[in-house]
Image (cartoon, rainbow, N blue to C red; front, side):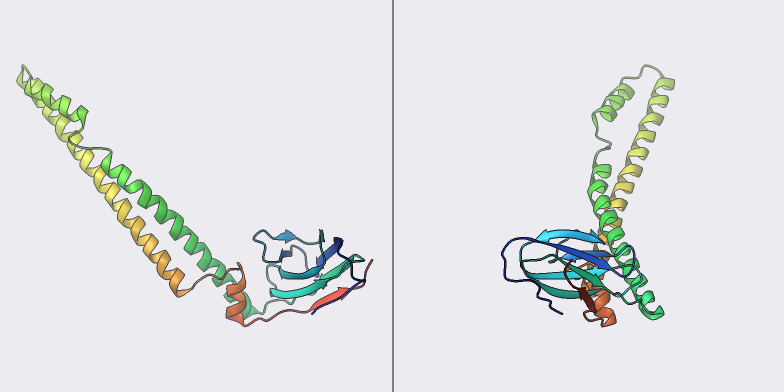
Length: 212
C-alpha cells in the first residue's frame, strides 16, 4: 500500500510508526538494527520500506511513499500466528540457535585444539633438563624418583596432546555440521524472512492515518 501526503517538498518530514501489539520492531529500508515501536524518525521524501515484526505475530513487508510538506502517522495491524505457524516459528528459532552454537563452539575448538595439543611436549626444555638430571643421578633412589617423574610428565603430555587433537576433531565436526545445516536450510538476508517463506506469508495490511 502506498500513501502520498502533502505537496511536493524535498525537506525531511517527521514519520511516526506504531503497531497494534506491544514489543513490535521495525526494520526501515533493510537496516540491520531494528527500532522498537512506537518510533518517530525524520527522513527525506521518497519510498520507504518497512518490515514490522513481533513475537507471536505474522511479519510482513510494506512500502510507503513519503511525500514532503507534512508529517504523517503509520499504524500496522499485525495478525497472530496460528498454532501450526507458531510451532514452525519456534522450530526456526531453535534451528538458528543450533546453527549459532555449532559455529561458535566449532570455531573455538578448532582454534584452541592445536594450541592445547602442541604446547606440551616430551621434548620440552623442562623435560630435557629432567632427563639430564636422571642420567647424572648419583644414587639408585634418586634415579628411580626422576624416572617416575619423567614417566608421569610424558604421560601427562600425551594426555593433553590427545585432548587437544580431540578438541580439533570435534570442532571440525561441528563446523561441518553447521555448514551442512546452512546448505540444507539457508538463512535469508532478513532474520525472519525464512519464517515468511516457510509459512507463505505475504505482505500484511498497513493502515495509514492522516497527518497530525
